[in-house]
Image (cartoon, rainbow, N blue to C red; front, top):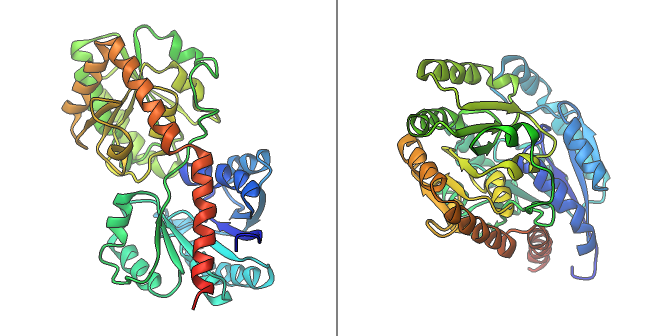
Length: 388
């Protein structure tokens, strides 16, 4: 397959812009120069920012009527009722189009593309990127994983252990591809610091994430309360969308802040470009309870920010404790607060950690490296299928 251009359909059923969507757009834009033509298939609803990112990078894209699996009642009802029609639509599209490979992105709960590709006779790689799936969906994944994909992609070593260790299919190829960072864009003094954050007195601690329970923001608030007892010049900024599906969690966070009398935490909502917030940061914090390959942490490292992160996903493989950042246990506000205070007290340590973090990301997770990894995986799986 080395001399032939590969045509790939990259399908995702979640249109809201997040880590997987950023990966798809950034990698697809670079795969063209590596002999891979990507068509991104995404939902028509809630995809405006994702569609704009794909267009800005010149990525071929196709919007389809795809509904995501969710706990919300009406969207869940629509998912169930429209599932067979959307599955047939994908199947017909795969049969008519001349794809060499389908790349099913978004995680184990996005299973329409693997089923449709299997029915259409098109090889499919199923991309897994989480470590916190309800047991019923994991059982369904196990059933489908033995029948649909030609191979699996895992976003982290911990994802491999979570899904593949007890799958019982030893002949299924498994490839690890971490989330990429555009190190040419995410570097210091590339943008002007966010004016609001930079205007705050004292040190700025930033976390970039969508507001949901997996991000452990309640533990971050408790850590902020502990920090405030020691220093009044440290302010926490949570930058990221607050989706309607997480309104109950956000209400709980507001109640917790009121109960603890926390005054040093600000929620900024979504932003199209996180770099100004990162440029304004003195410390970057990740309080997540679950992650795989956390793009927001990698981006902060690429911006040479000193990191305090919970030990989730593959953070410890790329962030070395006491060399390029500090790693603390999940769900431990005391340890999180202590790590923040250690960095707050030592500007030289912050600078040293930041420089080391930047070098680690440049050497291992730059988008050019990850794009080549995608192309190599595509060619390998197609070669395997051609070999008797």
